[in-house]
Amino acid sequence: MWPAFSSAETELRERVRTFLAEALPRRGTIPEDGWIHGFDPDFSRRLGAAGFIGMTWPTAYGGAGRSYVDRAIVTEELLRAGAPTAAHWVGDRQIGPALLAYGTEAQRREIVPRLARGELVFCLGMSEPGAGSDLAALSTRAIDDGDAFVVEGQKVWTSFAHRADYCYLVARTDPEAPRHRGLSELLVDMRLPGIRVRPLVDMTGEHHFNEVFFEQVRVPKRWLIGERDRGWFQIAAQLDYERAGMERLLSYAPLLADLETHIRVTGRGSEPLIRQRLARFHGEILVGRQLVYRIAWQLSRGVTPTADTALTKLYGSELEQRIARFAGEVLGPYAVLAPGSEAPLGGRVARAIVNAPALTIRGGTVEILRNIVAQRGLGLPRA
Ligand SMILES: Cc1cc2nc3c(=O)[nH]c(=O)nc-3n(C[C@H](O)[C@H](O)[C@H](O)COP(=O)(O)OP(=O)(O)OC[C@H]3O[C@@H](n4cnc5c(N)ncnc54)[C@H](O)[C@@H]3O)c2cc1C
Image 1: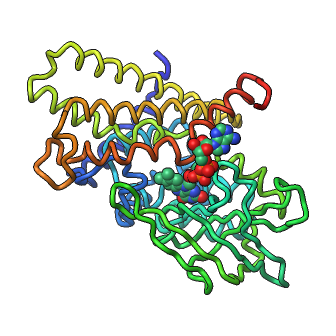
Image 2 (image 1 turned 180 degrees about the horizontal axis):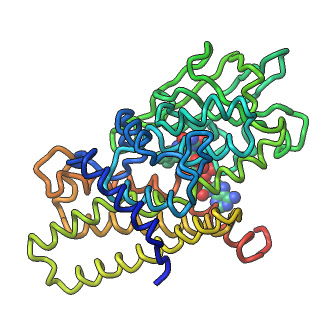
C-alpha cells in the first residue's frame, strides 16, 4: 500500500518516537491542536537540538537536508503524540522555506539557523478587519521613507503575536498599483516602537490570537523579503505550505485515540453504530494521510500543487470536525462538561467541539478552498 516507507524513513519515525517517549513522558492535559495551543519554548528547543526542525532545509542553514516526506513523518508523530509545538510551528512550516526561497543571504544567515534551533517565535500578519479571504484587499501601508518602511495599519487574528519575536507582515507598498501588484512582505521585529498587541479570547476561553496595531513603525529596508510589490506571488507559495500539512488532518488525533480507549473500557465497542463510525474514521484518516504524503512527495520534486493542497486541507479539516461531533455523540450529556471537571476524557470533548468551527476557517475557509479546487483543479470558470 502507498505510501510505502523506505528503511531510512522508518528509522526516522522510530527516532522521533523514541525522542517523544523521553521528552514527553506524559501528554499535556489538552493535547488537541498542540501546534496552536501547546506553546512550550523549551520543548521546541529540545526538538531543534534533536534535529527535527527545518527537516527540509540545507544543512548550511542548520537544517537536516532531508525530504518533505521526512518532514511529514516527523509532524505526523508530533501531532499523534499531542506534542506542544506552537512555539516553532509557523517558523518551521513556512518562514524558513519563505526565507530560503526569497530572502537575502544576510536574512537567511541571521534567521534560518535560529529557527532550526527552535529559538524564534514568528507570527503571521496577513488578515485584517477588512481583508481575510480576500487578502488582496488589505490596507496596512508600508511607506517608503529613506532607509526604512513606515508601517501603519492593523492586523487581526494574529496567532502568537503576544509571544512572537518577529511578524511576517504583508503590507501595501504601492497604493496606486492594481491591488494584487502593490504588496510586499516584511520581517518586523515585534520589539519595535509603535507596535501594540491586544488579546482576543476565543470561544474556548483561551488566548492565542490577537489584534496588532502598527503606528508609525519604522522597519529597516534590509527586512524587505524578496521583491518589492511582488509580495502576492510569494504569499501564494506560502499558503501552499500552510495548507498542506498533517496538522490539517491530525489535530484531533489524540482525542480520537483516547475516545477509542474510552469506548473499549466502557464496553461500548460492541455497539454496531459506534463500531461502524470508528472504522469509517480510520479509513478516512488513512485516505487523508495518503493525500498529505502525496503532496509532500510532490513538494520534494519541486512541484507546488495548489489545488491539491486546497483539497487536502478541505478534506482534513471537515473530517476533524466530524470527529469532534462523534465524540460529543458518544459521551452524550457528559460532553458538555468543561475541561478540568470530572467529565470523561477530562472535559476535552467539550473543548474540541467549541474549538471545531475554527478548523474550517483558519488557513482558508472551506468555501475559498472549494473555489480553488473548482477553478485550479477542475478548470471551472470563476463564479
Ligand atoms: C484559529 C485561527 C487562527 C488564525 N490565525 C491567523 C494568523 O496567525 N494570521 C492571520 O493573518 N490570520 C489568521 N487567521 C485568520 C484567518 O486566516 C481568516 O479568518 C480567514 O482567512 C477568513 O477570513 P475572515 O475571517 O476575514 O472571513 P471573511 O473573508 O470575511 O469570510 C466570511 C465568510 O464569507 C465566505 N466567503 C468570503 N469570500 C468568499 C468567496 N469569494 N466565495 C465564497 N465564500 C466566500 C467565507 O468562506 C466565510 O464563510 C486565523 C483564524 C483562525 C480561526
